[in-house]
Image 1 (cartoon, rainbow over the protein chains, first blue to last red):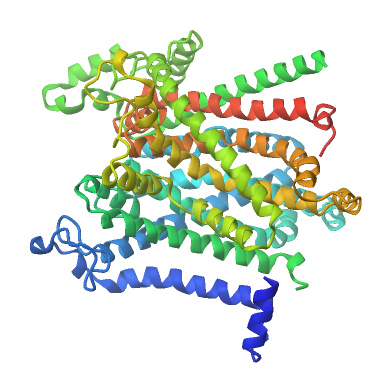
Image 2: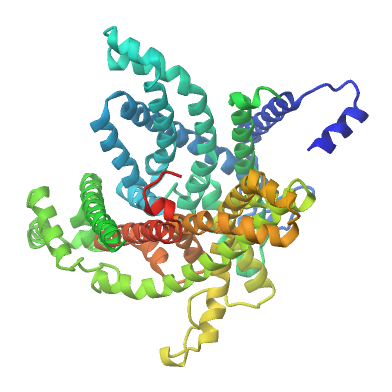
Length: 287
Length: 329
């Protein structure tokens, strides 16, 4: 890191960015990339999705960078549209999940010891069954489809974030101003929203960003299994499970590129979360 | 010591009973709320030939006309006697299906678990020992990338490369097709298990490697390591004496506590390689609406995760006297 920094200083004397600024720039660039995927999917149009039976199973070329599938559809168009769908579903699920986590975390700090014990037990309970198994159960109960996926991912991912928020809010409860507020007759709700909420907001934002990668991966997994989105809504999971049938025929590009694209998007979300965490963390502010 | 251990076991047993009770109540309620009509699911494709009277007869036969609370207690009472019902897709008792498949899955998961633990631990130690160098950055980069990789896609890539393209390993199943059960050799089983186990273990490397790296860095920057260096210790001896002893316990604990991810990964790996284990049974039960099997598997996976966490606690207590005496670390 140090060496890299000196090199940039030497070769770009006008560039006086410190680590935080570079972090901010990287975060913005990643956000732009992710926005470009979503907007690009809308701009691409339906042209690439038409079936061209004379252009079936073409390997990657300049015209079709990701090749074409067994119906002659352009895999690049399918991949970008699938990614956008995966990102949308992941976004919705992560938002719901963060909302549950915030509610549970705040409630267990604000409502007193009994509620705290009960909610902690609830958190442990949700962590006691593997995510994917409870996801399958919830998706099955909802009868599959987008609703089931969003509900399943949202209901399985909140406990770890709720734990973090609970710990943070418990610290705040011990603070003097929280005690004083209660003694002055403010309600628990008032203390939770006015005193706890502003403090945990950055944590919540980072937690939300860190939930995205997991939410997207689990959405893809449950769709891949066949319990998620229907084949009419081709997210990456669906594309990959369809590609599996053509693997033995040697159509490697059907699986490689969509999966790689998903990996890049998930990794970008992960980096974005990491950079935002550094930016909001006061311990990094001195640099 | 013995009394302590008994208290620990008793406490754990109470927790397990509470956990299973809660999981079964919640799962039962979820299934109850679902828009899926059990009679419809039972009839399946014959719906045109079944009239309303017959539907009522089926509902009465299975006790579906009773209130939910009564049905729950009937189900729970049967469960306590070890009867988990009959799987609709396999036409066998659920406990038998789970027992058969657990044997196959346990082998797969144990192999993957050991492999990921060893490789992850070694990678973490190397990265921390060479902190800031190229190899450290490479290990970190690879770990973060692996953590973002969809495990089933990794399985597809391995399948494509080693089974379809190079032909080194079979494409799926746990034993060769068309061979009698008593003629299947151990080598056959290992060959069929290799790719799913590899997929599953690669997915588990990242957490243990990153955790080990961080712990070892913390240890290496501590005062006693500084003092050891001042006394003239260096290299592998220093690492072995002061580093590895301190980081071994958290790594083992973490690996035992990762049973939940292991089970989830097994679902995907088994699905890609058509490996007949618990994971594949879970997917089949979900896809084809086999409620008794699904409920049985949910409970089974909860017990599995609980066993992992308990072992993590137990090993921590056995090795580390500070945890045993109830001191907070």
